[in-house]
View: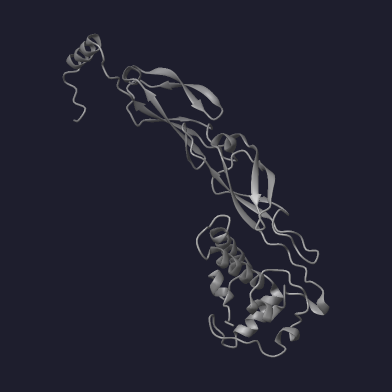
Amino acid sequence: MEFKDYYDILGVKPEATEADIKAAYRKLAKQYHPDRNKDAGAEEKFKAINEANEVLRDTEKRRAYDELRAGGYRGGEQFRPPPGWGQSHGFDFGGDGGGDFSDFFESLFGRGGAGPRGAPRARRGGDVHAHVQIDLQTAYDGGRTRLALQGSSGDERVLEVKIPAGIQPGQVIRLAGQGHAGSGGAPNGDLLLEVGIRDDVRFRLDGRNVLHVLPIAPWEAAQGTTVPVPTLAGTVDLRIPAGSQSGRKLRLKGRGLPGAHPGDQLVELSIRVPTPETDAQRQAYEALREQFADYDPRH
């Protein structure tokens, strides 16, 4: 069998800290999780990542592995563990197994990494990474949404997830104990939900700010007016200053996503010119042209 370089699998250096290993594992597990990545080989890659994390996050396993690796073994080389190596480091090989691990892993740590005298080592269950999509209104108001999760065995469970008001895309909601089952009395892992926000026909999100494009008529822009504008908290009246141009942005303070520092709503004006359809309308445009004969919009 081949020697596995667990540091190389996680893409970290041998001197990596516990935090470095955790961050690398979470990133790769999310990238290659079978529920998300359907590419050929993704599932095997995911198993290799879990196995590497199983060793490097465990102080005893990592210390023993580092001792072995210091002997000059490198990933891909043919390997056979020294006689009695696993037992001499306190690992038991008589169990029925507790994980989907490679022959290399089992040759070093036993089937599932049992502790001395055959007692299963307490091992916290692995975290599960998933995504949840919500609409912008839910992100603003907060609330609850249902999430269906399918396990590796094909079974499905439905969870009700509480969404905090003001959550932003990319934020992670942690559901304690909803991950993989622990062993030896250790707690279950957690479910880590990365939040995505669906596109909205009325608004575009920019951090905590919300952008809304407001169509207005030429005479409204020229003379100024007050018009109703939608916001995530309901419709408000907005004063359009006289002489406004397309692209001008007006700010509604505190009308963005809530938070310690709430965002604003930016209203971008878009002047829409009506197409003349009658002789009277065409004459009105001609009169307007005559009245503004000296105006050159390209000057």
